[in-house]
Amino acid sequence: MNRTVYLNGCYLPESEASISIFDRGFLMADAVYEVTPVLSGNLIELDGHLQRLQLSLDALELPNPLAISDWRQLHRQLVDINHLVDGLIYLQVTRGAAADRDFIFPDSTHTSPTVVAFTQSKPGLANNPLAETGMKIISLDDLRWGRCDIKTTQLLYPALAKRLARKAGADDAWLVRDGTITEGTSNNAYILKDGKLITRYTENAILSGVTRATVLRLAAEAGIPIEERPFTLQEALSADEAFLTSASTFIMPVVEINGQPIGTGKPGPQTRHLRARYLAACRASMS
Image (cartoon, rainbow, N blue to C red; front, side, top):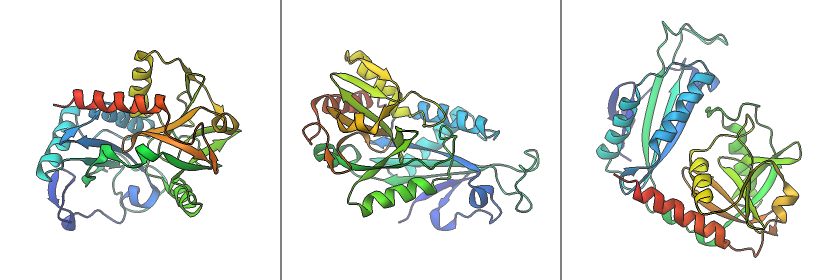
């Protein structure tokens, strides 16, 4: 692969990009990230991702190294340089490299953040075959730390959970804490029951999804009643439909949990309708 990546103000071949072994993102996952989808060369919901980036930076007392206009230009430049049609742009901001490894935050006046961004080509991103067949998931205990609302790079447990799901013959996992589903390994979780859309309210236990916000707006516009509350695994198993959302999957139907079919065991009509509305809204906002 011959990508051009962004590193601390420079665009350079990926083979030439490197950071210090003392970078706190590498040593302590002292970093935040965002992933913005690209369809037909257009950035999807970039402003929402940049707003959430700022919230994550603020939560970790990390200064934002770039102005909003600079972030926009950086994303546009990466799309153009790499001739990206469909795919993702990953950005990461770390606290940077202090003189040595230490738990104490370094003085921000002497340590500059590290900024990394790169493209990932995903041809046909909006045409994932799982949108037609639906995803099979399992439930696992939610063993993550308590501030899941901060989009940090400490992703080992979600990675382990995805691995356990694949070993069980499933596509992904939903996580359960205190008897209710929080979210997926890298996505927000929803069920539909008797025409109502049910999803957990935003709090420290889940990430406030950019896609989630748009989906709830589109559901409200479509006249679908919305209940923002925790729901149990049993509620999910007895739901009419279920789905998840993320920047890389948009809206993806869930048709099986722990080997038990949800509803008819096929993507349901409301889920299909919401996915179509979401993708139409994305394409209408392309510029």
